[in-house]
Length: 209
Image (cartoon, rainbow, N blue to C red; front, side, top):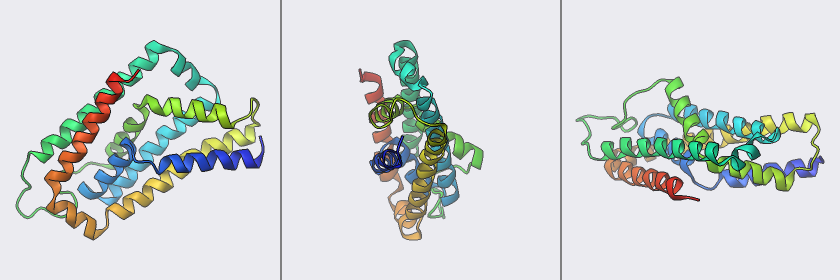
């Protein structure tokens, strides 16, 4: 594997991260509804799941997951169930009025520790079988049949590192005071829209072939 191929892989990965999806929604909502710290840990959880997908793809296990329909379907329905649960939580929050004197950040969301935020991000990504399809297809297209162990290690580190850095930036941007204040004013609308999107994503996983 050449340095050019390695750079091409990381470029494709970085561009893919810029496309909003369930992970982006989870981090942005944690930023405005909870805190910057919470959102950063959600992003770290997402990055940890990315490390799992990247590692399994490098050793060929992701291809087996995609080809083993019973296992793939199990992951698909588990991911759909988790997204549906997130949708339920958000829609319930949207139906609830904010407590008097609620702060801009954290309005309508119960406090949670770093481990809970990390777990939420990890489950959001690891429960999405589309990640398996993405990694297996991109790696098959951009990686040569034989990859030196140095590049395997570099890929395994770079993929989650770029993801963690991107979501840390997202967490900082969306937890800015002005954005958080805007969320406080429109919490029920934002939670309702976000919950509806999560519900749609869950439905898409259920009906997808």
